Amino acid sequence: MAILYAAQLSPTKPELIAHWLPRASYCAGAPAVVDRVGAYRFDDPAGEVGIETHLVRDAAGEICQVPLTYRSAPLDAATLVGEMEHSVLGRRYVYDATTDPVYVQQLLATIYGGGREVEQFVHVDGGEPQRVENTAGVRGSGVTGVEAPIVTDVRVVVDGTDTVIAGGGVTVVVHHRPLGVEPSGPVLRGEWDGGRGVLASLR
Image (cartoon, rainbow, N blue to C red; front, side, top):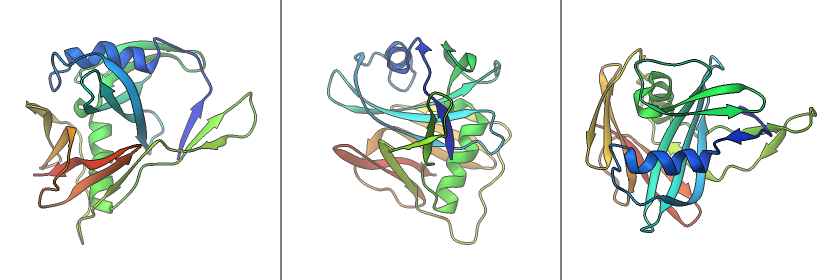
């Protein structure tokens, strides 16, 4: 379960993504983002890191998956996307989630455990949190009889529009351009308004 706040952000998430996407090594030179079609979240069990993946449609009409993590303090080993001011939480450091071990751990946990995105609740005017509908959904295929490995650090290589991540003794590939054809082996499947595809797979 993700608890969010009805907060003012500067820059906004679409602004941050629009600035990042043309510089992202997996999508370098891509047209600026014109439309955010959905997003999904994983939960950090420690409650410290926000984990959110955005699905955006660029100016060429293609879907691109942009995983981000939000932290209250810098993480030197990860790739910084930018910084934002959150009217409730203060300064937030935003990272390319594929370089953040907390994201990779939860991605693997979802794939191995056959899990889903978390439900989201928003605090409004100090009242009880209100549930909001997710704009994208994911489901892991599951790995029978095997626990997700523990990830403490990651090594990342960009392969075209994929990010190949080694961590916890396994390799997981994040498909920034979702796959229409499912590869063999365990995967993370996704659905959003107007589309579906494979978002990540174990190699």
